[in-house]
Amino acid sequence: MTAEKASNSPGSLKPDRKIVKLYLAAIGANIISLSLGTAIGWLSPFLPLLISHDSPLEHGPVTDVQATWIASLLCIGAFFGTFLFGWSAERFGRKMSLLATAVPLIGFWACVAFGTSVEVLYAARLLAGLGAAGVFLLVPMYITEIAEDRIRGTLGSFFILFLNIGTLVSFVMGSYLSYHLTAYILCTLPIAYLVVFFQFPETPQYLIRCNRVRDAECSLKYLRGYTSTPDHLEMLRTEMDGLLQMQVTGEKSADGTTDQGGISLSDFASPSARKALLIGLVLVSLNQLSGCFALINYTAQIFADAGSDLEPNMAAIIVGAIQIIGSYGSTIVVDRCQRKHVYIVTSFLAAIGLFAMGTHGYLKSQRIDVSAINWIPVASLSFVIFIASVGLLPLTFVILSEILPPKVRSLGGSLCTAFLWTISFLVVKYYPVMVELVGLHGCMWMFSAVCLSAGLFNAIVIPETRGRSIEQIIHAMENDIKS
Image (cartoon, rainbow, N blue to C red):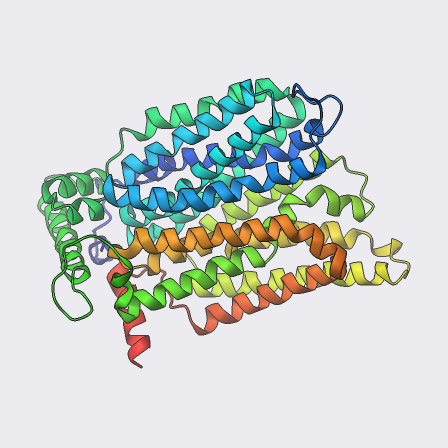
């Protein structure tokens, strides 16, 4: 529940009701997303160095098998870290758990800076995965629980935007700075995050769940910029009443009795919670099986196969810049257009771009002269990454946090995020194998079919969430089940 009703009334958005601190809290929380982006992007510019004879490791270059493990261990660390941070979010709160995500990322950069063996790099990637688990789970959760309904989508899309900015920063620094200097500089980001984010409050929803009503009021007043004027006090009371009512509703178990105990799988007994969890699992599966994450990891190879003269690092920088432009576009359209429409349109457009890439690859495999259209893979890849960054990728996390009921948000989010990292590991690890089995064109066509399925799934199953309070979204899902 947020101040949507009050904000829609005449004169409610007075100049003195500032929400600058709400934006600052969202930006402060996403400094860790920026830091994670640098950790994820680190591999692209430095893997060629690690496998070369100029490797900074004591025992020389890493083998191809070791390189694949360096790439994929992040996903394994993230899988286990998801449950750790899901438990922590309920036990210690969203804010403290978010602060804790900086610790493994500091450990990652320390291992990179001072490690001299491939085993230390394995540990580094596991630590990066641990941090990634917390960031992917907790940043969308924190934003959802502090945001006003009318700007929840915009603030939620900051996550992917900051993640992509961090990735580009790593691409650029890795291209122009040394291996160790890059690690020294980027280690300061999670440290700065600890200093900055510590000043922002815990989410009002979590505080109310802990029966800290007075603290929840203080948090709301800070985030909404409420003052002691009668209008603002009325808006504060309205929003607090909504949050308290949502808490009472959330404590009702499936048989209608009040349950104030811990969270367990039995809390998914309600139809709306089950439906939200199933939708979330499908959403994260489609997010990864769309191939967009795999394409980003193999950008340089795809550019080279297309006959591009671009250096691999420059190709990665270009793709990183395209991601940022698309992610920024998402912050603009997500609260101005229907979520469903944005997701559906971007899914279908991504399907078209992937189909074009696959068709070019098929013609090339049949030894048909495609020199006149060799621009298609590069143009299509750039188009797909841009379009996916606008809707298909960021809206997955926005919608996931919106549809999960508050009581099961951390557990449900943990299950969905763990499933996401499992699919991500399989896609990244076995994408080269699939290319060998069915060809590049076969992979692109499969990814295209998944994007098409994602659009259809959203159109048929997922409720519209734009401009709705969390209570309204849950009620809409319950009504869909009853009908």
